[in-house]
Length: 172
Image (cartoon, one colour):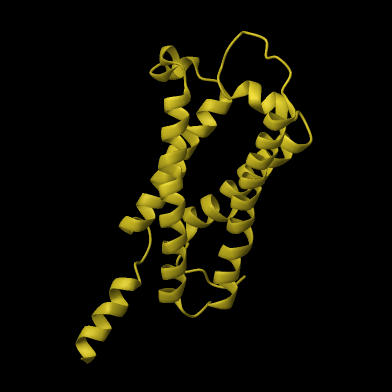
Protein backbone atom coordinates (compact mmCIF):
# COMPACT_ATOMS: atom_id res chain seq x y z
CA UNK A 1 0.00 0.00 0.00
CA UNK A 2 1.29 3.47 -0.92
CA UNK A 3 2.17 5.96 1.78
CA UNK A 4 -0.72 8.25 2.65
CA UNK A 5 0.90 11.01 4.66
CA UNK A 6 -2.19 13.23 4.50
CA UNK A 7 -4.39 10.57 6.15
CA UNK A 8 -2.35 8.69 8.74
CA UNK A 9 -3.57 6.19 11.33
CA UNK A 10 -6.94 7.04 12.82
CA UNK A 11 -7.83 9.39 9.95
CA UNK A 12 -7.24 6.61 7.44
CA UNK A 13 -9.41 4.23 9.45
CA UNK A 14 -12.22 6.77 9.82
CA UNK A 15 -12.25 8.28 6.34
CA UNK A 16 -11.09 5.41 4.12
CA UNK A 17 -13.02 2.64 5.87
CA UNK A 18 -15.67 3.57 8.46
CA UNK A 19 -17.26 6.54 6.67
CA UNK A 20 -17.49 4.85 3.24
CA UNK A 21 -18.87 1.63 4.71
CA UNK A 22 -21.49 3.53 6.71
CA UNK A 23 -22.67 5.61 3.75
CA UNK A 24 -22.69 2.78 1.20
CA UNK A 25 -24.47 0.51 3.68
CA UNK A 26 -27.14 3.19 4.19
CA UNK A 27 -27.74 3.30 0.43
CA UNK A 28 -28.07 -0.49 0.30
CA UNK A 29 -30.55 -0.43 3.21
CA UNK A 30 -32.63 2.21 1.41
CA UNK A 31 -32.61 0.53 -2.00
CA UNK A 32 -32.99 -3.12 -1.10
CA UNK A 33 -33.77 -4.08 2.47
CA UNK A 34 -35.46 -2.97 4.66
CA UNK A 35 -36.22 -0.35 1.98
CA UNK A 36 -37.29 3.21 1.41
CA UNK A 37 -40.43 3.01 3.55
CA UNK A 38 -38.41 1.73 6.52
CA UNK A 39 -35.82 4.50 6.12
CA UNK A 40 -38.53 7.15 5.78
CA UNK A 41 -40.33 5.86 8.86
CA UNK A 42 -37.15 5.87 10.95
CA UNK A 43 -36.20 9.48 10.20
CA UNK A 44 -38.25 10.70 13.15
CA UNK A 45 -38.74 8.35 16.11
CA UNK A 46 -42.39 7.71 16.77
CA UNK A 47 -44.74 4.97 17.83
CA UNK A 48 -47.28 5.96 15.19
CA UNK A 49 -47.65 3.74 12.16
CA UNK A 50 -46.46 5.28 8.94
CA UNK A 51 -48.88 5.40 6.02
CA UNK A 52 -47.67 3.99 2.71
CA UNK A 53 -45.33 6.29 0.80
CA UNK A 54 -46.43 7.77 -2.50
CA UNK A 55 -44.25 7.40 -5.60
CA UNK A 56 -42.68 10.86 -5.18
CA UNK A 57 -41.59 10.10 -1.64
CA UNK A 58 -40.14 6.73 -2.64
CA UNK A 59 -38.23 8.40 -5.47
CA UNK A 60 -36.92 11.13 -3.13
CA UNK A 61 -35.70 8.57 -0.58
CA UNK A 62 -34.06 6.48 -3.34
CA UNK A 63 -32.33 9.64 -4.59
CA UNK A 64 -31.17 10.35 -1.04
CA UNK A 65 -29.77 6.82 -1.03
CA UNK A 66 -27.87 7.72 -4.17
CA UNK A 67 -26.36 10.73 -2.34
CA UNK A 68 -25.19 8.45 0.46
CA UNK A 69 -23.77 6.08 -2.17
CA UNK A 70 -21.94 8.96 -3.87
CA UNK A 71 -20.34 10.04 -0.58
CA UNK A 72 -19.16 6.49 0.01
CA UNK A 73 -17.77 6.22 -3.51
CA UNK A 74 -15.88 9.51 -3.20
CA UNK A 75 -14.26 8.38 0.04
CA UNK A 76 -13.53 4.96 -1.42
CA UNK A 77 -12.19 5.87 -4.86
CA UNK A 78 -11.09 9.50 -4.81
CA UNK A 79 -9.17 9.41 -1.54
CA UNK A 80 -7.45 6.18 -2.58
CA UNK A 81 -6.61 7.70 -5.99
CA UNK A 82 -4.98 10.63 -4.19
CA UNK A 83 -2.97 8.22 -2.08
CA UNK A 84 -1.93 6.03 -5.01
CA UNK A 85 -1.23 8.80 -7.55
CA UNK A 86 0.70 11.06 -5.19
CA UNK A 87 2.54 8.76 -2.75
CA UNK A 88 5.59 11.02 -2.58
CA UNK A 89 3.76 14.33 -2.56
CA UNK A 90 2.19 14.91 0.86
CA UNK A 91 1.60 18.60 0.09
CA UNK A 92 -0.61 17.74 -2.89
CA UNK A 93 -2.30 14.96 -0.90
CA UNK A 94 -3.08 17.42 1.87
CA UNK A 95 -4.43 20.09 -0.49
CA UNK A 96 -6.81 17.68 -2.23
CA UNK A 97 -7.94 15.98 0.98
CA UNK A 98 -8.31 19.39 2.65
CA UNK A 99 -10.54 20.70 -0.16
CA UNK A 100 -12.66 17.54 0.05
CA UNK A 101 -12.85 17.75 3.84
CA UNK A 102 -13.92 21.39 3.68
CA UNK A 103 -16.83 20.51 1.39
CA UNK A 104 -17.73 17.52 3.56
CA UNK A 105 -17.49 19.59 6.78
CA UNK A 106 -19.91 22.16 5.37
CA UNK A 107 -22.25 19.33 4.37
CA UNK A 108 -21.87 17.79 7.85
CA UNK A 109 -23.01 21.01 9.50
CA UNK A 110 -25.97 21.53 7.19
CA UNK A 111 -26.97 17.85 7.44
CA UNK A 112 -27.02 18.00 11.24
CA UNK A 113 -28.77 21.37 11.23
CA UNK A 114 -31.60 20.25 8.95
CA UNK A 115 -31.98 16.98 10.84
CA UNK A 116 -32.14 18.82 14.16
CA UNK A 117 -34.60 21.44 12.87
CA UNK A 118 -36.75 18.70 11.31
CA UNK A 119 -37.18 16.88 14.60
CA UNK A 120 -40.34 17.61 16.59
CA UNK A 121 -39.51 20.07 19.36
CA UNK A 122 -40.29 17.43 21.97
CA UNK A 123 -37.41 15.29 20.63
CA UNK A 124 -34.79 17.91 19.71
CA UNK A 125 -33.24 18.20 23.15
CA UNK A 126 -33.86 14.63 24.28
CA UNK A 127 -31.12 12.43 22.73
CA UNK A 128 -32.15 9.51 24.93
CA UNK A 129 -35.34 9.30 22.89
CA UNK A 130 -33.56 9.46 19.53
CA UNK A 131 -33.46 6.26 17.52
CA UNK A 132 -30.42 4.92 15.65
CA UNK A 133 -31.35 6.91 12.54
CA UNK A 134 -31.32 10.25 14.37
CA UNK A 135 -28.09 9.32 16.16
CA UNK A 136 -26.61 8.41 12.78
CA UNK A 137 -27.67 11.73 11.32
CA UNK A 138 -26.53 13.83 14.26
CA UNK A 139 -24.26 11.95 16.70
CA UNK A 140 -22.26 10.01 14.09
CA UNK A 141 -21.96 13.10 11.89
CA UNK A 142 -20.59 14.99 14.92
CA UNK A 143 -17.90 12.27 15.15
CA UNK A 144 -17.07 12.67 11.45
CA UNK A 145 -17.03 16.47 11.68
CA UNK A 146 -14.84 16.29 14.78
CA UNK A 147 -12.43 14.06 12.88
CA UNK A 148 -12.31 16.54 10.01
CA UNK A 149 -11.76 19.48 12.37
CA UNK A 150 -9.03 17.57 14.19
CA UNK A 151 -7.41 16.86 10.81
CA UNK A 152 -7.52 20.57 9.93
CA UNK A 153 -5.98 21.39 13.32
CA UNK A 154 -3.18 18.94 12.64
CA UNK A 155 -3.94 16.76 15.65
CA UNK A 156 -2.12 13.43 15.33
CA UNK A 157 -0.61 14.20 11.95
CA UNK A 158 2.05 16.28 10.23
CA UNK A 159 0.75 19.35 8.41
CA UNK A 160 2.56 19.63 5.09
CA UNK A 161 1.00 22.77 3.58
CA UNK A 162 2.64 25.03 6.14
CA UNK A 163 6.03 23.40 5.53
CA UNK A 164 5.74 24.03 1.79
CA UNK A 165 4.89 27.67 2.42
CA UNK A 166 7.85 28.02 4.79
CA UNK A 167 10.21 26.51 2.23
CA UNK A 168 8.88 28.90 -0.46
CA UNK A 169 9.32 31.89 1.87
CA UNK A 170 12.93 30.94 2.66
CA UNK A 171 13.84 30.48 -1.00
CA UNK A 172 12.35 33.85 -2.01
